[in-house]
Amino acid sequence: MIQEPSTDRPRVIAELIRKLLISLGEDPDREGLARTPERVAHSFDELTKGSLQTVEEVVGPGVFEEDCSEMVLVKDIEFYSLCEHHMLPFYGRVHVAYIPDGKIVGLSKLARITDVFARRLQVQERMTVQIAEAIQEILEPKGVGVVADAAHLCMMMRGVQKQNSSTMTSCLLGSFRSDPRTRNEFMGLIHNMG
Image (cartoon, rainbow, N blue to C red; front, side, top):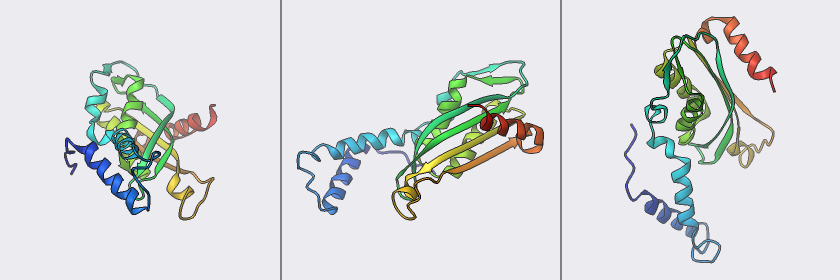
């Protein structure tokens, strides 16, 4: 259940960041940190705005009737998210494809749908599924395929400190799951074209 954010959310976040700075042994009034609490509050507003949006809002009137039945693929949609376990960034690219069944969506809407789910405290596995299910719900296509490839700073900066690791997740619905030829075409397109 999503809790409605407080209208004074930026002020509350800024106060918490000020307390955090003090807890870290910093002086939040020194020149370099004097405006940091407000900057962090603004940053968190931007980085978590997806939790305040719906897919319907960002798609709006961007769905069109169209007699098209061939795969539509948008590759390399960059995304930035925050890991819900450590609140550190993870970022990468999402590849989104669907096979229309009488409806298409404006291509930019696929990037906007990605951002709705990326711009919140998140895990990559859930984000990948949410993107695919949202496209399935809005378009009712014959199939949807989503692959995400990301670097996680929680693995790079702390813990195991593996700088060159990346994580890939996928969600295949409809014909992308049931038809090996569709799945192979999708995977071939995202891996073989520059």
